[in-house]
Image (tube, rainbow, N blue to C red; front, side, top):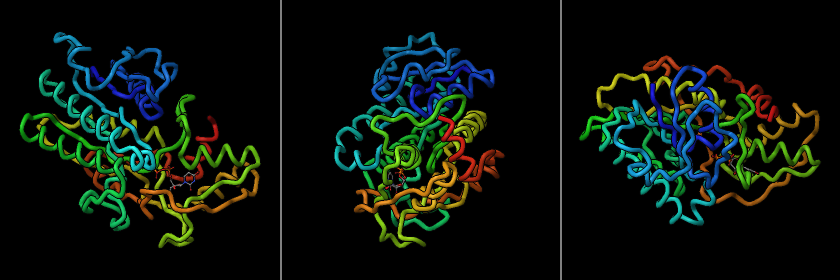
Amino acid sequence: MEILITGGAGYIGSVMTEYLVSQGHDVDVLDNLSRGYRDAVAVNANFIEGDISDTLNIFDEGKKFDGIIHLAAHSRVEESVQNPALYWKNNVIGTQRLLEFARIREIPRFVFASTAAVYGVSAASPITEDTPPSPANTYGMTKLTMDMAIESYAKAYGITGTSLRFFNVSGTFRGRSERHLPETHLIPVATARIQRNEAVTIFGSDYPTRDGTCVRDYIHVVDLARAAELALGRSTDGSYKVFNLGNGNGYSNLEVVKTIGDLLGVAPQIEFADRRSGDAPELVASSLRITEELGWTPSIPALIDIVKSSLEA
Ligand code: UDP
């Protein structure tokens, strides 16, 4: 397939690009490098530096794509609460312009990186795709808004839309691992702190969970890439589908930090801080729907193996 991957210089995007190229697809990567790295892009992909809002100018009418995988987005929960303008502009207005590109150029498939953050605080556990969304932060709101936009584009214009709701992603694939600046995600932050013999800060110890710290469901980044390929393979019937992607097991922040410490052979020092704004207490996925409908199952389901893989960074 001829695939356009937006955000293909970021962590998840660079893994998806590498994976899909290795599966024989032709991939164009569009990334404005605001948060990505040129050197993370697979050598066999065609790289274009540019913005998602500008695709109609970037690609001429002769350029055909079988599908778009849209990953380019801002994705820091706390930043989204502090600077919502940035998130509505990039994640919503930018994505709508990309949808327009898909509509005008008649690109039949649109796969979107949605998020567990759309479910928010009121969620049941495990969360199914029928759990009513209730985002606890601007990041989740912007992603939910675009899920709805894609659904309406699917219905009206026949674009086959798929929203993949990623839970917490980690792990390394062919040298590509979490590489955010600043790094805010628990596994890489805690790993770096433990390696430097510094205390790991855990945000919030009074959540209604088994040990008072937030609970998350971790998925290996290569399993997301496999899911994206399956989503591209859906029949182009103009339908819209949502799929959760997690392992169905929740781990508290304390358990995650202890797992990292065990693998590094160090008892981690821990300090508790106030809750981080926008955090939902517990986000654990039921991924039954994608298993039943697309045959996806995680290849690396255990947290310990995901953390081991992330330590290869
Ligand atoms: N977290 C933490 N200390 C850190 C980084 C993250 O306690 O140094 C917590 C964060 O508050 C949340 C969980 O780890 O409860 C997962 O956060 P992360 O940013 O990794 O992913 P998110 O769930 O926000 O997508």
